[in-house]
Structures are given as C-alpha cells and as structure tokens.
Image (cartoon, rainbow, N blue to C red; front, side, top):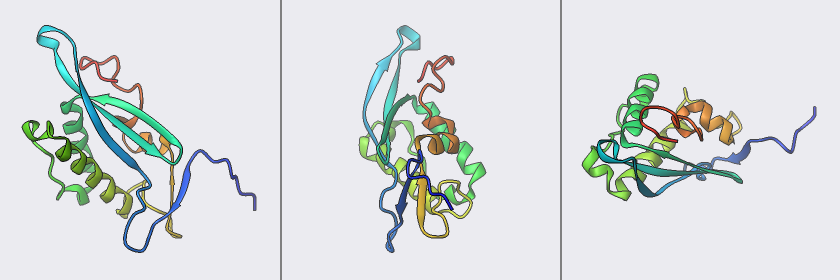
Length: 148
C-alpha cells in the first residue's frame, strides 16, 4: 500500500474529549462596501485548516442563507440558533455561531467533515469548500450582492 505524505488534506486525530480544532475559524473584522443604496457590510471570515489559510468576505444575508440551507440538509443543526442581524454585529455572537456550526459538523454522522473510523480528520481547503460554497474563495464575487 502506498501512502501519499503530500496530500492536500490534513490528518488530525480527534481527542477523547472532543475536537482538536481541526478547523480554526475567525471573523476578525467587517468592511463597508458599495455606495448609496448598495452600501452594505461584509464580514471577513478567516479559515485555517492545517497549513492552509484563506479568507472570504460575506454579507449577513449569505450567513443566513448558509444556515437555512445546512439546517435542511443536516437536521442535527436544528438546535443551532442563528443570531439575528442586530446580534450578528457582536463579534462574540458571530464566532460562537461559526464555531458551533463546525463543532456539530465535525462530529455528525452524516457530515462529510466527520473524522474517519480511526478518529482522523482529512480536511483541506477543497474539502471545506465542497462542504459548502460559502467557504470557497471567489464564490459570489460577481453576484448582485458583490461578495467574494
């Protein structure tokens, strides 16, 4: 059997008490984009998996769309509350939501992000983007929302 030591994913072992944070995620800032009636805030989302790090900028509406879509696909997310727009402005609320989302998806039986039978996570930028396009750099850049 040949083992590829240069895979694009990262293999991390889950600890007995939960996760070793195989996906690190933060929302360090937001920026004002557009002009006039098209003026809106976009939140910077930084994602780190192993030695891969990238950032995307997303509007509140994109977060809400992701939440609704993922809840339909993964019923185990039903208990995860999505912060209303007013609370989403609070950095702690944004972070709590995204970290909870990944905590559920990294441990859920039906999730493509779940650890394998040996307890290893095989994650990459590509795997996270395939899980949901929200996390792909460049997605939404040319939409009416202007996010990228």
